[in-house]
Length: 249
Image (cartoon, rainbow, N blue to C red; front, side, top):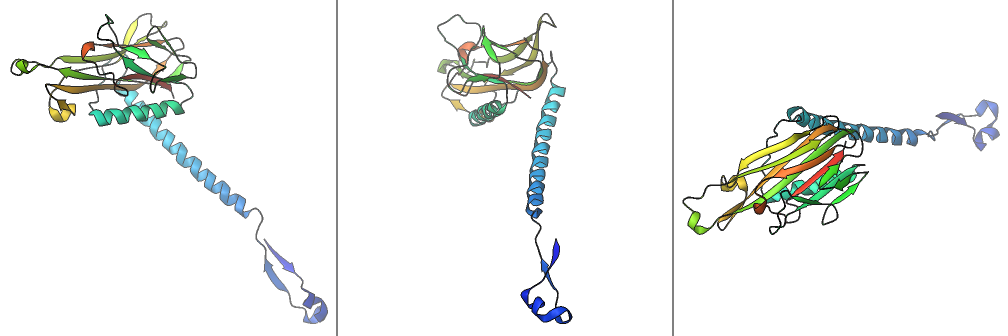
């Protein structure tokens, strides 16, 4: 904004000798527009990032529909720990989320991994509940469902020549009143100890194998999710290695 300012010298000089001086006055609202522009730019960046994440999740959903098999992602121990940490942080930022830690007692007759919500890194919020070893969906909507199981497959030294690696499998199933029966959402089967690079670690006469599953699904209020895993006696339930979770999108 530009204005005219009359100085004391102008008054004394009279109308003929008066000199007009232009004084530049800064607009009081200029800084406000700059702040608004920066905030708008940040909002656009955040919106773009959210759109990219949504697009990636939708791509995953389009390749893994209910009742179809999802290809396992094979990770070594460091990658598995990183995935656990990342998923846990994403879950905490969601309004509704649940993250469970797996447990298995070798001396029990359990036929499935026991999921726990009040130990280690486990938590639940936004209406999610763990009931009868199943996750109960609080509201209808889009959800990211994920699970990982880790195995520590052992063998004795006298089995070196004749030993055959067992098949490992892990599945996430959905029970919905609308469907009326259990359907497979995610599943994977692989052979243990295929090679050192693929399995990440080999220790003594055994090796470590990991199966990770994850995709986006449209779920209904009251749906329940459960897992089915074989070779339970080979399961590695150290913190961060075997987990199961869901968070709302």
